[in-house]
Image 1: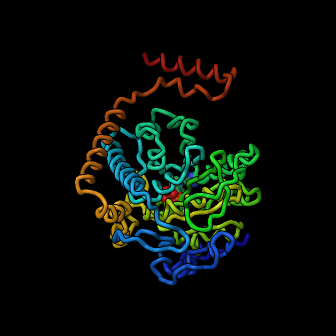
Image 2: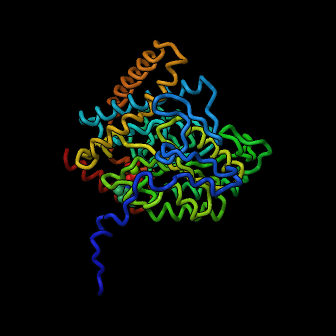
Image 3: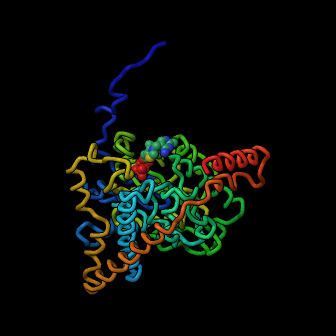
Length: 417
Ligand SMILES: Cc1ncc(C[n+]2csc(CCOP(=O)(O)OP(=O)(O)O)c2C)c(N)n1
Ligand SMILES: [Mg+2]
């Protein structure tokens, strides 16, 4: 058998390298119906991170397609939600280090991508997370401890999915993209998308979609690494073929454990949507206003029956992959420093500083500390379940085999008494 041994193919050598600014990440101009002419500014600044409305220094950036959220209260809500998420994330990390959690999956750095997108979703919309979307869950009203439960090892899952219209976490990379598309096809069969007569939503100019309170969309989260999975690509084909009302929200946090995103794709991830036949947008994932605007547009479009959209939120994982990982072995310090300057919370704070009294920031911080203390208390109160409960709910009705397993397990446990 001939075996091709090309070390560059294996190591991802220069042939596959993508220089950070070498590709224009703005694919949407290929869909003039949705966006009009290509109005992308030539500035490398935009090409670096995608659509941006709020610069790292807290100044607003004009964009011809998406308008900045004018609602002052909502901006404050976004800030509060991001501070809360970061504080709870810190508390959960500490709990893991103290042996109270089996594992924790930090979201630090991705608060804007998660809060901005979650805030764009309506309660009727159905969300499918991967495993890092704690801020999405919390913003959607899932109690903090329900996210913790799985990672303390006392439950097979987290929250009541139907109460929050949000599926539980999926650890198997990209499997949730197929679940989401299947759900989206069900939405179409139910006639729950594209039935409205309204004029579209608030996501930006030129949305043009119809929309009513009766329509719904599906949003599924996946990482840059998960974009390489067969499941994700099959999901794109199905969604495009059936016009499923699904927004694929990819958080490109630059790393899939220790594999850099640029090694997995020689083009901007958003551009992959071109090949499947639906719009792909790259957005500054550390800009909560831009993420909110772009996701609102995409969800409105899906609800109105105009099919899927891929959003690539360009962000950065400011923590290890999980608490089991030592990211200092592969994340270059200068890369971390560069991304610290684009911190999603700090840039919104700079904008709000001109709008609110200084004491308000202290109050948000105080509320986050209270929430963290509550999370710690609730976590420590989570007792291990009866071990035999792992055999519950395997099937709607227990089979003879399962009954035998249950009896064997009970006898085995009794043998220790
Ligand atoms: C099908 C499958 N293969 C491998 C893994 C192991 N694994 C867990 S997380 C991960 C990296 C995922 O990276 P990315 O999709 O970028 O998401 P991120 O963790 O950065 O949020 C890998 C390879 C898995 N969970 N599922
Ligand atoms: Mg990643």
